[in-house]
Length: 105
Ligand code: FES
Image (cartoon, rainbow, N blue to C red):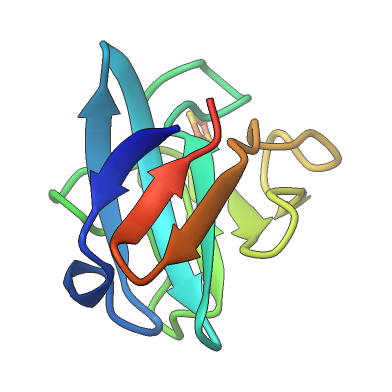
């Protein structure tokens, strides 16, 4: 397992960007659960955010690509609106314990 961050640095309804061993990733916490995805929009293959650590839409209920506005479900990474509707972000398995948030691989 690879350490990602301390639990208290990812607040509920918040998001953060990371680069782990050269891999751009994003993490979102929702209703206490942590979700990690590759930070790569399936539309153009580019990073999702324009502002550091800003991956959510204004309601903080969906992941949003800043370039053309694609919207993704936080829980599954599926694109539900935008130019890549039906495609998905690549989910990265993760776990959380008393020491923090960990990538499974
Ligand atoms: S690059 Fe993400 S919606 Fe176009």
